[in-house]
Image 1: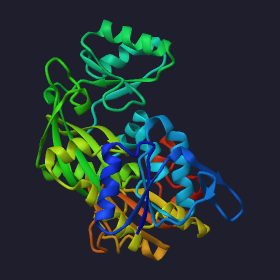
Image 2: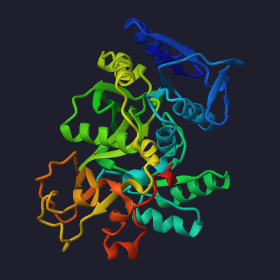
Image 3: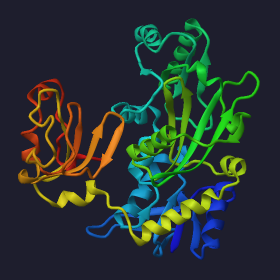
Length: 394
């Protein structure tokens, strides 16, 4: 395999470890500066130039896109995708995770634990927002920030108002978030590769510092995660559209509370803490995907006119309740059930004899017109149907 590692910092620990792990496994690996690409667009022939020369062929790309170059970096990744080069993380996934508000908006529709969060602009909305998240103390976060930068703790409502007013006067967008007191200055970083958590550590803040990031002086220790925490980390990674991610979770009284999903997680802290070859796990996963790649159905299925992917919700009183998938007649209507969502449970490729319950959601591929007719009228009045042509999606 010939691997391109996109990084503006070839000497940092993570970049060096990825290159070293690839070479140890007999792969060719080059570190390419993300900002030195030129993107050429022509009918039927997307292309890339690197340092004024046409780019040679690569089998896979491992993006390490820093927050300061998100726009250009994701444009380069997207170009590799259009050239049919496997990317460990897609541009879409990186963009989803980079914006804290966007990522929480996406996660909030799923059964994922989140600290209660609100986003306001009008000064009059600040006090009610603080009350809705549970009152002071509250966490105030910049929408874009890494390594604990732009995360503040306000002990009182007055202090929170002053911080928010100051940040908004500097044209900064901020989130107001519930302070999860039971986490006691601790959090968990789970490193997800594909559909597995390959390593996890608990980070503990030191002294008066409430942020547990290693870059803020936090102390890390290896931790064996429960099934609930592992499953939550993997689901968040997949919902974001990522394959390689660092998922940060608080240990709340009701289970894991997601803080952030990082698309370019660092290796030094977690490899040092756990003693595991995480870089090697990432490279092995990429090599396996090059040999047998997963398909992004959103892009591949747009060629089928009139067909697409949609969710079908089964409300109380639906004719589908207590029927098996076969008995619903979906297959006869040219609709295939890909995944069944039941509360926090995800059941991929459900058996045809599985009995449906009220509240279930079915992710289906099939004839859009048939699926539109199955959206309950009450749902149609209250919100826009989730059925849509795939071409309109990002």
